[in-house]
Amino acid sequence: MPTFKFHHGELGPMTGTIAPDNVVQFRAITFATIPGRFKQSVLAEGLSGKADFTQPGYACPHIIPEDGAGGGPFPGEVFPAPTDEFECLVLQLNIPISCLQSAGSSSKLPVLVYIHGGGFVLGKIDEQHNTAIMVEQSLLDSQPVIGASIQYRLGAFGYLHTPEPGNGNLALNDQRNALLWIQKFIGGFGGDRNRVTVFGESAGSMSICAHMLSSPPPSGSLFQRAILMSGVIGPTTAPILPADANKIYNMFLKSVGIEEKGEAGLKQLRDLEAQKLVQASAQFFSGGSLWLSVQDEQWFGDDAGSITWDRIPELIGNCEWVDEIILGTTSFEGTTMTERFAGITPGAFLYGIAAQSGKKSAEIVSQVYDITPDMDQNLFLTAGLRWIGDVFFDGNTIGSLLKSIANHLSTHTPAIPVSHNTYSEKGVSLRLRRS
Image (cartoon, rainbow, N blue to C red):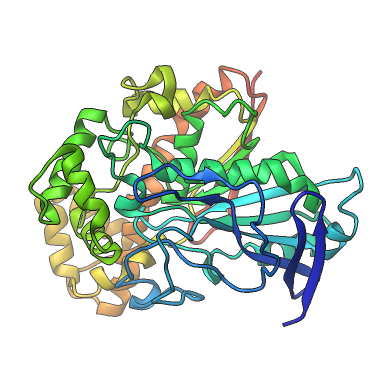
């Protein structure tokens, strides 16, 4: 693959690869360092002498998914990917060649930063999360942008709340450091630090919500616009209280065979092999719960301890440093559950709905999704996965949407773009303005 050499005014020489349609990709740029397990990451001030950014970097330790589209990996995913607990905080930049060639000019491009999903336990920068195709399309549309993707610590590595002061919400701080790095250095690539849009899907979208619940760092806003796809903080995903986080910490210690609690247990936890923590992270919440952020003062400030799920739309709506929000769902989210759903018969599915939610609910589901007890299994799989996507992603997101819009419109934002896509429609766009 052809390469492109570039000299950044602050970072120095950098070599990237040339993707199709005149886009340069810089891979595995370290944006922060990790001084130790369960320690806050530290923003990188330079490239530490590295100049070659043509090769993929390490992924953060994560589980290998048992299911994906069609019961296997998603297109573009490579498993197992090489991982490194301390060398995984990297980002990828996709930049038009023309932008790099005129990086010193006053004309700067808007920047789109993607935060991947994966239930807070898996995900990495790969072809599935490659923003190059978006940058290529932006050039075809004569509206060029810079694209970025970031990695952050997962599972217990990023979300276990230890008793050590100042080391909570590690993954959120990783993401913040990535955004701070972009704020600090994107101008040298020809990007506009004042026109940054973050977008995320599922866990990535919920992470953006957590950033909007926090105050920006002293240096200023991390981003000006946000796109929330298939995930918002709701009743089961709201930040938990420190006392509850401490209970989870002690339970996690026990799950890996550590009887000591507190700092004594933490020392042993730091000595465990990384792969054992990966497996424990996945099994600990295997029942459907998620690793969640914690309401500590370091991250949530004065609101710490009072962030209840019913207040979250209001708090996000009152985020004064974000100008515009797009909220919606991606199509056919249920494909992520293919493997788990494949063994269920249509009759058993409808019986389960009736047992849990009542006979009337089962009748409604049967009518809306055209599911009958004796239907073809393949046709049922498609219909059932649509139901899963609607219930777990679409309904959860849109259910929290209306209150968020109302509160946001009542405060400072003059316009809110709202996008809601369905499976069969091309998409519905709505712009609401205050009268």
